[in-house]
Image (cartoon, rainbow, N blue to C red; front, side, top):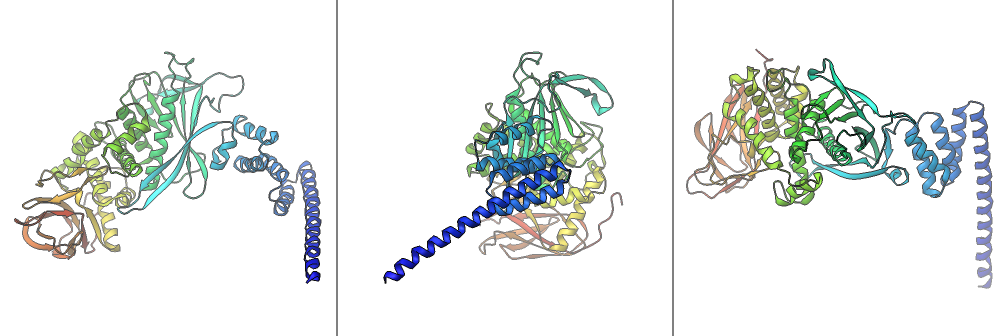
Length: 564
């Protein structure tokens, strides 16, 4: 028994001694590898130098000097993101390391502001950041997409202002971008970043330039406005990429520049990757600021759709303000757990802008009535489809908003991407192609809130939700009218939720009724390709029916090209 007690401490001592010997050998090897790396750098062999440091890193991943030397070598190689990551790890291991902090400061202020960062690095950098999370509902279920966003705060000089130089000057383009009407000067900037879908890497998305209080002609401090605009711009970027995959993924260095100008007529214009916001001294209502940001981002991110004679050549701006502000309202409901336009959701929007009441519900409602309800009232085969005036402009926007309300993000994205050109006819054609593709892959869902309010009679008004009308209920005698695009061949429809006790009457192109039981498909017979109408009616004496969606199957057929 005593021998056992003596053997264990002896073995432990031997193991500790061996461990110390191994550690000492590793430390000596790491020191040797670092010295070799330094010599190779002096000789111009950076590849060999990095190889030595990677070997050292494998032996001693928590050795601060390894990360210090790797940061320096990454700087020499022109890889600032990797250099920042190395210096960040150095400071995690040795928080008071003056060299690491000095090099990080140099990377931020010694040249081009970093285009990419890591969230974990923000605690060590010499710039103040505000971080937030953007949430997007990607389907009718509970699926959500989450992205981290961040923007700088405080006094930051534009990277183009080198030491000892004054403010930067930028040409202000004339309407249409065909000339220059003047110049504006800027000496402050707010940088905005959005996280990649996976991981913690932040990529620069926006630069918002503005004049300081001393440079301003009126002595106004625009820092708060610039930061709020950057914040909203980052959110609409997440919406456009997450919901529609637009704009297409581009090189990391493509960054949108926003120029806050004191001169010019009230409003904003987008030219390439620049957005000019004019007359910033005039205090707009909060919803007007939101509308302008979403409008110009629509011109930037969405494909062109026009060319109209009025109210402006391309409808992508108005479509963008509607889509992105709808998603902003929907996110507010997600955040507070109470869907738009609940008091909690509206209060969340006011807190986001931070400047009093935001009449977003009224703005969304006005746009919906002016555009989508116009398209529903005129019908899909209206002569407005071939027009180029303001009514035709609203008609096209309304049709695309109806696609979003009826089918969701995927169908609208498919419609936009399948349009072969930028004329209105191309987008009507794009929808027909999107329907053809969806029909080949299975069923097509039309949300109950996509009904025509003028052709329908509902005893209980639905809730004006963020993206569509919600909580559609049919009481006895109520009718809900829907336009549907069917392909050549047999078709059927069922309704959700599929409750067996649900009993409705169905009219197809105003003919019927056909009995419709919840969850059971009803054949529509063989139909010609084109637009048709479906009307749901609650029979007299029946209980109210809460309607979710119409689910269609439709036969395949060739889709004629635009104009044929």
